[in-house]
Amino acid sequence: MKKKILITRKYPEAGISLLREQGFDLTLWEKDRPMTPMELADLAKDHQALVCTLTDRIDRDFLGKCPHLDIISQFAVGYDNIDIASATRLRIPVGYTPGAMTEATADIAFGLMIAVARKMFFMHKTIISGQWGYFNPTGHLGMELTGKTLGIFGLGRIGFSLARRCKAAYGMKILYHNRTRNAEAEQALGAGFVDFNDLLAQSDILSVHCALTPETRQIFNQAAFKKMKPSAIFINTARGPVHHEGDLIEALREGRIRGAGLDVTDPEPMRPDNPLLSMENACVLPHVGSATMEARTQMSVLAAMNIIEFYRTGKVPHIVNPEVLNP
Image: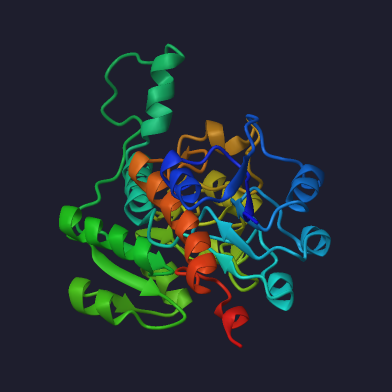
């Protein structure tokens, strides 16, 4: 019998074609909206494998209704939408797509850093609103980035790629805070390992690239923003709940930090009347870090290969919970 795979979005064709070529029976969700939790569970009951993404709630309730699944393959590098503990108890392997979006997301962080430093989003809005008037030598001045200190919270693949850009383009000093040391970054980029409080105090630009965990949830809060330089820029392209949005708004309004660039918010999508969208010192994007043809195509391929290799060899190339495959 052919294995049936539920595909929860219109993912790039590269991965879908690979699955078709292997003879899987595919069900593609064609509607231009995510499935509701009820729709997702009802459809998944009749399938053996699932390709999902961050906005699909693969929680305890879903897994309780679909404990029969052979494998879940996540179209993302993050997986905080999945109850990994429950999946592991049920012996369901969870695949994901690390590395595919590294360069694309580093580009977004780099772009947000420049945009915030020069108030680009706000200045663009002055044209639209008819406020581009006379030359004002002291109006809306930005900050140059050459020689500044970049702090990375979570120096993995994406953080490394951002640090490489910043060092090459602006001669920045690189600091980072991780759970473990990154010897490659220290050797290749001269990155300095510091504790969290020193990262806050010394960074001119502080860019977040960590996973969302109980330890990192809202770690960038009022107390953290108070420890940063008033001239510092905060960038988050990781997960929205890593920062406390109310505290960030307050820090920007009161001038505790210079500015913020966000590709992730809490909640998502952000309300159109959110104060961050009208602030001179904030630049916000709608979670488009991986939105390049190259990254999304590679994500689709990796998500498909996780399923193909699982059924072919019993192994998952990129797996969150490898212990479920151990005898």
